[in-house]
Length: 297
Image (cartoon, rainbow, N blue to C red; front, side, top):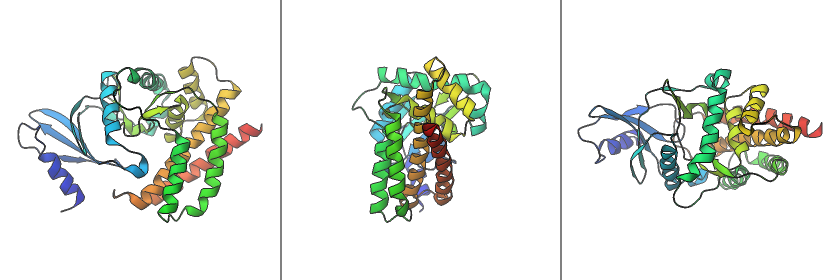
């Protein structure tokens, strides 16, 4: 029996169902196994996955963030949770694509979602406070890659040196509660409003990381990325903020690159991580070049 069959059987046997269910695999995820389940006319998403410590994923943290995000009005309700399982209400809607993120008509409500995440979720969060500091993540990934004999190990001294320069450029930060994985596919439009899902990397962070990730993950044009900054902070973007944001945007791409490098070694998901690494490394090099030019100007 395959890992997917095992997962589906586990989902089908959960005690919360009122009748027999037939879990339907959901495609697109590159970390977890996800299923859609219909039970007595109600639909659910079931996420199957244990802690993934090489990525800093702790399911108890994800659960706490998911519950707080629902109470803050951003995310669907958690219906059931047990070790390795998270059951959520299914949102009937359209999953965003990078093209949707780049649509100027969506920018204001996307920034509003980010601001509400940062401001409102701490009012409902329970339990230990997680921190997601991208430069710690990068350094930890470097240790993991060396220990795992990664083919990318020769790149690490240069990547770490560039990370140190970016961290210095970011400087002191405001601390908010970040989603920290603002891929387009984590936004759902139900026709009336947006929902934000997938809280496995959630934790306290600089607001610049989510804003940088929103821009870098969907390749926002520079003027739109700057408009997002201006909307978020409620003022025109000056040179100092522009440089700090450029540094964090580059850092978000470095983290995604090294995430993929680690996944090449440890992930069991059927996905071409090698190609994903190469694409993100190319994009990181481009973003770092833009930061470098701005820093030297």
